[in-house]
Every structure is written in structure tokens, then in C-alpha cells.
Length: 162
Image 1 (tube, rainbow, N blue to C red):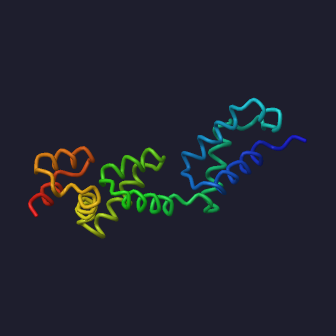
Image 2 (image 1 turned 90 degrees about the vertical axis):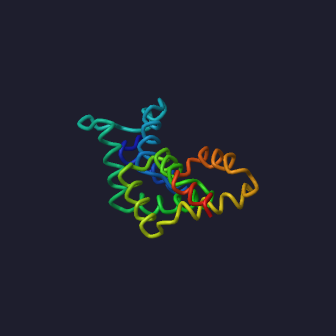
Image 3 (image 1 turned 180 degrees about the vertical axis):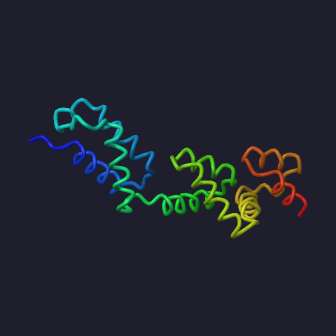
């Protein structure tokens, strides 16, 4: 028996979210892939008065309203993971954007974290140097390595000065 498309896609989104945390963008991409699958068209009934894109948007909005997708909590978790991985603030922002978070949410969250702890990047940088055992390098080599890791110029100079 065929299911309604919105029910089917909603259940598929829930299945995915049961296994992995995801952003709205990621869920949209997964549902789009499901719609491109030829077998899906045999299993589901599409209502003719709504486009497939609108259908996906409605499902994502429904998941967001029910707080099944919680991007604020997810960005906090991912930020913490990248912070522990000793990534620079710039690199963390890039990684969050690649994960599918909206730029405004990223900027808001990162600025909040930096305002809570203005020396955040400096602390990450010091831990990075210790973990990678870079303290014995010459100044120019150290600068080069830290620039490659996208640390800010200010943080690099503060660490070298100390």
C-alpha cells in the first residue's frame, strides 16, 4: 500500500535523526536524495498541489517546531569538539559552515563564546603548541606552522612574545 509523501519523508527524516544529529540543511539534502530515488515514486503518493521543495521545507519546519532539530544545541556540541581538537577560531567557523549551519548562527555563537572568554583562541593556541611539541621550534618556523593552522596574527604574536 502506498503512503503519503509527507508521511514517508517525515518518517525518513526521523530515522536519520535517530542515528545522527543534523542541521536543517543536511536534512533537506537527505530528503532531496530520497525524492530522486526512482523506487520512492513507486512507494509514495505525491499530492499534486504542492511542489517537492515545499514538501521538504514543510517537513523541516515541522521538525524544527517540534524541537527535533535543535541547531543551537548541535552547534554547541560541534564547537566544543573542534575546540578540543585545537582548531583555530577561523578554522572552526569554516568547519561549522561546511557542516551546514547558517552563517548568522555561526557568527552569533562564536562571538558569544569569544565574549565569554576573550582569550579563547590564545588558550587553544597554547594547548596546540604543547600538544604538537612546537615550543622548541625557531620563531619563524613556529609562525609558519601556526599561520598554516589559521590562527589569528594577534594570537600568534602574543604567544611568541610570551
